[in-house]
Image 1 (spheres, one colour):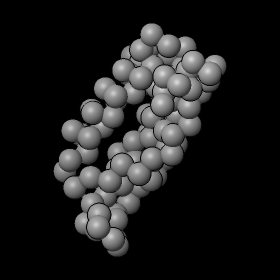
Image 2 (cartoon, helix red, strand yellow; image 1 turned 45 degrees about the vertical axis):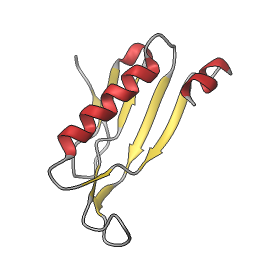
Image 3 (cartoon, rainbow, N blue to C red; image 1 turned 60 degrees about the vertical axis):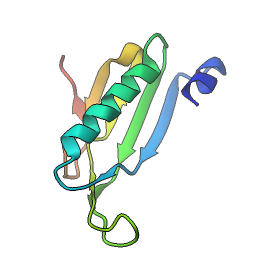
Length: 97
């Protein structure tokens, strides 16, 4: 999908998310997400803005998992631009790397 949007001229992709993981799996999950977003933006002038939920999943097949937060903005070339904290509501802050 990223390729198709890129070839159609998209510069920003907004990605509402629901990253639900078993408690304790947040670090592994966010590492995979960052790697995936870096790969999707590498070599392209495209930015992915992802907004994730925060809090416990209380119903349905994912009951017991948590939404970890950690909303991200990944810029062209895979550059991390903004990152929200884990497991709490907050606005993303600038990544200084």
